[in-house]
Image 1 (cartoon, rainbow, N blue to C red):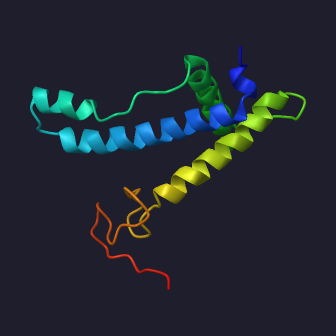
Image 2 (image 1 turned 30 degrees about the vertical axis):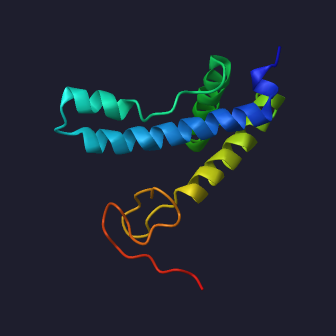
Length: 132
């Protein structure tokens, strides 16, 4: 049996799935306003199923909680943090960076883009300049 909290690759996958799921659900929520119940059900089917056991996602939520406590200024000492939690926070940072690379924020309005290859922001319409 694999220990989810020590499986860095699995945790990275779970975090990536959570980021993508959250991004997709936010987009679907905006698009579902005013849609019929049948259309809403069809749109919900576009959210991909999770691929790992629930333990990975529970640990991912624990990492989000730890990160929010650290950002809030709650002091956490090295002695108070388990080694797998510290490693998990590193994996969380890597998963977030990968997600943000795939879905960069618009420099004007901050909205996450569907991909990094878009020519303009889907939210505010600003045209993106391409680096040469």
